[in-house]
Image (cartoon, rainbow, N blue to C red; front, side):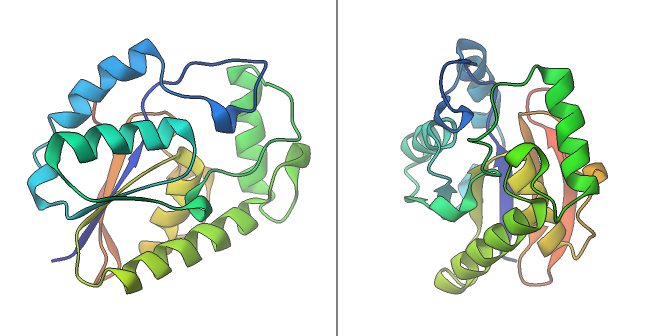
Length: 190
C-alpha cells in the first residue's frame, strides 16, 4: 500500500516583524520534533517532501538526516499566501481562518483564497504521486495546505471542520485507493 503521511510543522518562533512564511521553529518546536522522530512509521517512508517555508524545511531536513531518507522541497505545497496581512493575534487569526473556509472563493483579508490554495496543493500532490508512483511519502507542511490535501485525497468538502486547528498533527492517506486511513492526530499528545 502506498501511503501519504501529511505532517504539520511543530511550534514556530513568532516574529511580528517578518512575513509568517519566513518563520522557523521555536525552541518548543525543536523539543516537539523529538516526539515526531519517535513515530513508528519512519521505516516505511521512502521520500520526504516539504514546502519551501523554513519551518517546513527545517523539519524535513531533521527527518531526512535522522532516517537517511531522500528529501525534496516544492513551492506549491505552501500555506495560503497571507503576505498582504499584518500579524494577527491567535484569536483573530483563527476567526479569519474560519471566514476563509466559509468564503473559499474570497480573498479574506487579502489572503490567497482557499479554493486557489486547494487547487495549487491538489496539483502539487498529484504531480508528486505521478513522479513517485507507489512510494510512501511524508509531506511536511501546514494546517491549511494539509487540509486541502486531506480533502482532495479523501474526496471531502473543504471546510474548517477538516482542519487540524493546531500545529503538530498528522493524517495518513492511502494514495492508491484515495482514502483517509487515519484522521488528524497530534504527534505530541499521542
